[in-house]
Length: 220
Image (cartoon, rainbow, N blue to C red; front, side):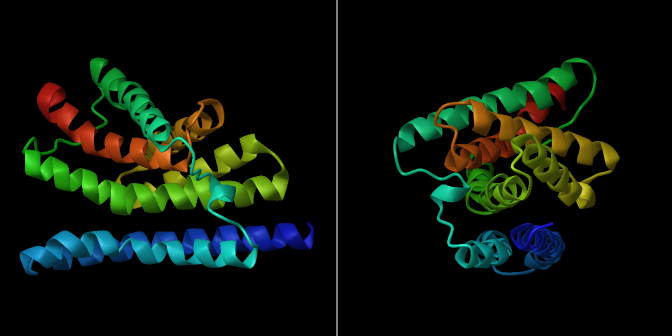
């Protein structure tokens, strides 16, 4: 293993461990937030996610990487957003609707109240989807690719780590399902035009916002 590969591996390990601990911290803060003032309950669950980005930002600075290097683009933002919407439609069909039609409920039941839906989308866009996509389909994907020069290795390894991250929210099936979604989003990024990291943040946020609504309306 070269010096560069060792540095990339260290970046992967440290980033993932920090995110793993960060998710536990988020859960703890969310449990405390229930007794806090309303305004704080709205803001704190979002901002508590952001420190998880610090290791990725530090390693990017160390390696002189830019936002473009991990998958962002300045051009044709509206087309990127549209690509994200299409990717979300695909993920909802594959991972929520199709399993439910065969009797497997993979989504939790959520609120259909308009304000709750709006807040859920903002929470996903500004916290969960933002952080997880930058880290897993952005920073970790690039480091894993740099280590091996293999996109398929980067796709599978980053998606496996993404699945393991969700061990706290479900059992083995949840890990497998989430890893499969990670692979889907990675493949979309590689194969669909304008499917940038921004597009995946939009897709991830829409998927997480809409899937409990679909479950509540049709399969609850």
